[in-house]
Image (tube, rainbow, N blue to C red; front, top):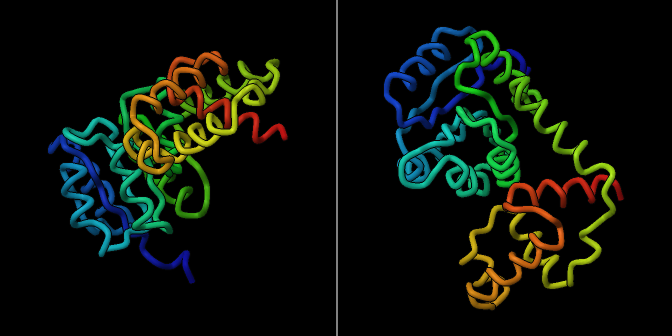
Length: 216
């Protein structure tokens, strides 16, 4: 049965000492197997997919392409794999951007070993583990939006298309190519979307979109 199999874990972390700690934690834990470790998004994208790990721990603050971009590239290649962000950031923008591109969990780097291992089991079983501080910020974000009307109704059909692509983690250039419009036009649409939704970032816009969809 699935519960008797080792959970295959890959780690993407550029800080060598931190990476070694996580690798050691997983290798010594019954029921887990560390199948690969990577120090950059580029290395992970080129080498990680064939191993098809069940769970990937991703540092959000990678050099070059960051952890959010890394998950955005890997998730389509590994649709059954669960991605958990490891981070020092607690701001809502990073949280929602990571979730929007396919992350299933969001843990602070200071998470103790026992809690991290429990989170890996949780996400493997279908859960969405989050450090308590992170979960509180997510709840507060939705509570902040609760009294507001569905401002997304004010968006034009094209603005809805742009927002949906933003929510799927597309970069501005990719939105431009997908909709056959210029990057400058994409910027104009996004500025209008932010104004109509009364937000200042992609993460806040995606959060509102998800909130409105839930309420429908």
